[in-house]
Image (cartoon, rainbow, N blue to C red; front, side, top):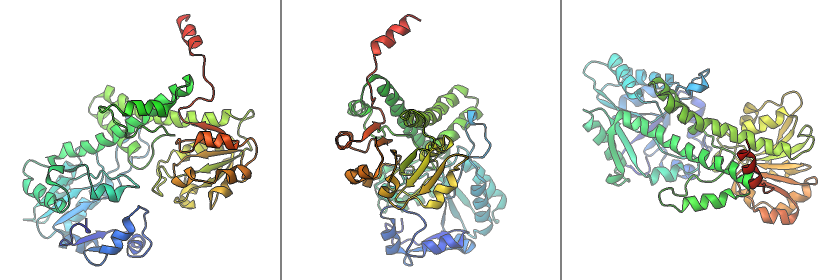
Length: 449
């Protein structure tokens, strides 16, 4: 935003001094393609990073609240998970206490419907006399790995406000209008804006579960999920996006937002709606378990004591984020059965891997510095993140480093299966069966039931 609005001063504040120090250094605290150069270009011009929260609030005309809203711990999974809004509420109180003049407060965090009303109430209760604090919902639709591109070229910008917030909505719209066409800046009610974010992520997660459920059918019948996905995606009513079969969705948003929608639906007395969206989460979990079973069943005696190379731990390529990564439960299931894992990811720090895994009684794991080292002496190689370097790896070198038979389990269909099989690998991919089943016999058995 600072890059596109050189006439506006932006100050990013945080209580964590180490994090602010990192933002002011040459090594940013997050990895996002294209972000480093933009920060370096604008830092100390119209982009500043500070721990002086109160001063920044006093000087601001618009305050963006962008804090974590994780799922509440210990929530009944059958009813979804309520978002933890304590940080949002704390920010609202801080703004109310510090603001000296009329200020627009903007929700950027993903929040359940009605959060804007809660924030507005807190502001009213704590604001100074004669200070007007307006509340807007402006959810972000950025995808990790393409966040810079998504911000610079958004499909839409949504600004939700109360009925009397036209002035505040227009003020925020004027900021985005520096680079976003006006017809892509959409104003609406605050509840609608809050729900639009949850609904968007829920529908994207649903598409992932849709194609993954079909991959199970493909594996059972001999169909190829990539061919099915292509045929479906060419239908203009469906489209090709998010129709890539994989080990499942992860990250900080999809699971949390679907769970929040489940909780909201159940809280509103809509159990059928809650169950509908809960099944998206159940399908995701089931798909990870099924992929793990395919790995285990490939070994006659199971995976106890088997060295398995794991390529990729981030929940997707283009990011070092391992929050809710499918790699964690898959690796943990293998460890619980006594596997010996050698894990490599080009961007995920070793500390994140260790935070998410427990070697248990019989399993063990090491975090390797490169892909070939992880593959050395392995009996199987599992691809759990579709990093480009895995697609272009020197597979002849990998094959020479592994034991025989050298098995590859591709959780994202990134490898060239035929090329690897020509080298000598035994390859298992998502949505493709190793053996064609006798579907006629299965149908006959159903008829005879």
